[in-house]
Image (cartoon, rainbow over all chains, first blue to last red; front, side, top):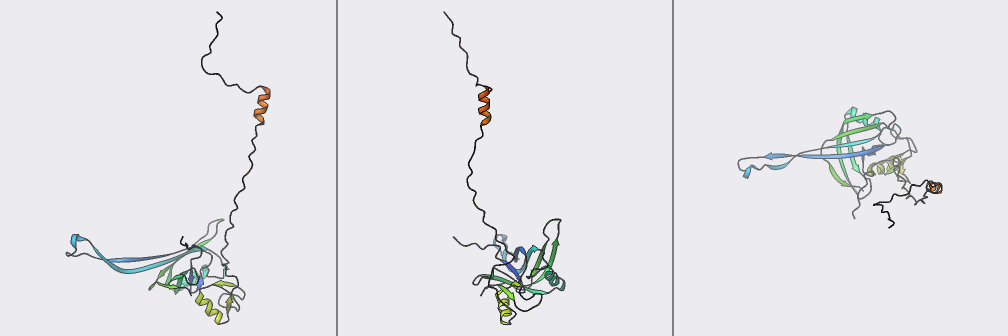
Length: 136
Length: 90
């Protein structure tokens, strides 16, 4: 039976440092198609070709001010400065694939409910290409 | 990879452990700022303890009420069904 990657092991690294106290992360890539329809299309079936590609990466986690990894203040600084950072989505294990892209932090939200863990959510919008590599 | 910081660097104090990519880790190790940590277990990840299977429990049937009722003659006898047939003395 194939080995399924544990979601706990796949995480985001921002600028080479893990996003701390993360509870969930996701990468969403999309591709829009260029529709072509002319009188030559038999039966008026639309012909599609690959068009613009885009992607977002979202990290969710718990708020900690003393984590040695990237904390919510680091995320805020990136957001506030509009910095372009390198985001890598990986397990970090040698020989395993990783996805990497330059991205801008386009969203940061924090939530704090009474007697519950404070949490954050950061959204990074990819700028440029997402590349697939292998961990060395 | 988990590295151990040897000299204060950016927001990190000496002795703190950081989870970084292999490239950044190698770079910091080359600069003498950090070294590869002996324990590569992520410190913000606490594996759950495996639940131990429960041992089967002995079942004790507590029926002393029945015993008491029987002793007192309070136990209702089941009613007989069907027609009662009286024997006629001819």
